[in-house]
Image (cartoon, rainbow, N blue to C red; front, side):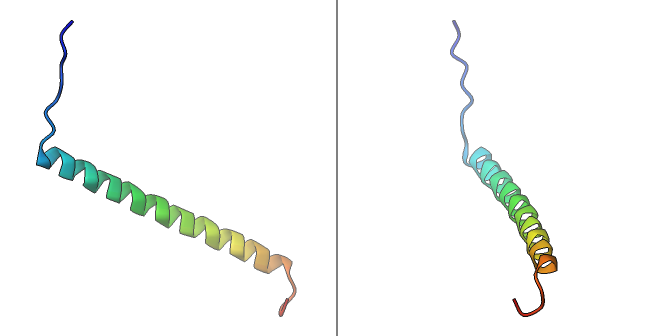
Length: 50
């Protein structure tokens, strides 16, 4: 059985880090939007000042 391995280079690792960073930013933005929606929903259910 051949043991095929891909050599991990600094460029590959940097690309993976950049991909993870991009994914994290997208998740953060989507989460912030969902939090805002829920806050607006809660605000609509309560009288002013409560």
